[in-house]
Image (cartoon, rainbow, N blue to C red; front, side, top):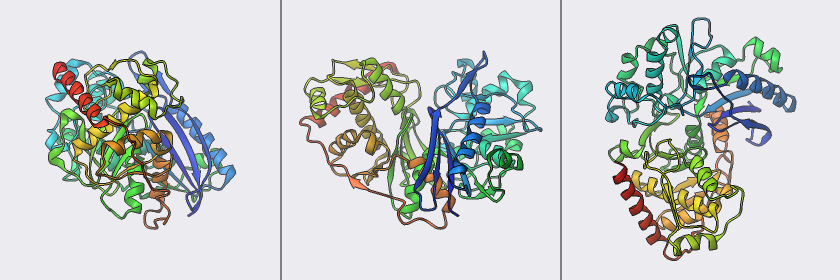
Length: 463
């Protein structure tokens, strides 16, 4: 198998990448994610995305014949289909607030954290909460549902006509999966949706070939193989899991969300109140995780400090933050994290807003790694290129660990590519793995301690 097309839907951006058999990028295309609003809730415009995907496949296939396709998407999203394969309801955007009365009622039926390791999250970030609200609010429409597809598998179904379930999305803070037992949680029966769930397949399974109609529109060959699809952060982790043969590793996956994931699960340290949780790897393995909406918060700090996100900053800008006790205190989004519910605050006037935003990310990631009890190596993917200095600050904050930089900005799509050749791993999957050189900022450890004290003090007041 040679040329492979990867379709990747992030919360903010969508991209398509074509790789050859050696994992070299041949072609790519991207655009912002597409949302609509029907007067009641924001939804993902899957029809517009589908049209764009078909055109992208056609363009990529003109560059080189596509022989395999895989899909990765963000989590906390599912699609309900009726018996004719039509949408029962628009696909809910997980940033939709759920009415407090509904959330309270849902909290009475959701399984215990000790069963699912899925924390109670705001908005629609728990997929079970979304489904409960839709079932209550749109009972007639919901009762017409015959199939429930996790978001990556919806696109696999659109391509092949075959419905499946895959555990990386099912096990991503949905409240619907018991990862330690590898089975559905009680919520699936409480919501009466077990009959809507298609058979479970592995993320590296071939599901089938494209439908005839898809082949006609895109010029795909009928023998092209379509794989199961995967949750995006788990795709990024799969790449390292694949190449390191299950060696203990922690990956910091960056994007709209920053997620620290480790295959050394310490379930006893997970705290629902701190947005630490267990995800599920492509092989069904438990992954201890901590997360916050880092990409969104970075943007917000830059906006509040009137800073261009592409602006340069240097060590002197970081020095100023430490010397003058200039802080960004969490948090700057409504999307969970260890300080969810607090209102972000900037103390002092930074020379560089981007330096402040980068220091904030370093401090938050450092905090996350402590929550998980991480002591081994930590790998960064795209952040290695986008914000190397931030990684070097983290290296100073954690002198007893190696902060490793992969130098690759395509971790998610490369991971999805690896899943199309899981039994034949390429020797070069992990490229340019360098050790981050720690900054030498005098007083940084004390600055970190003061930031934590202020952040946790604010948290106590908020609670």
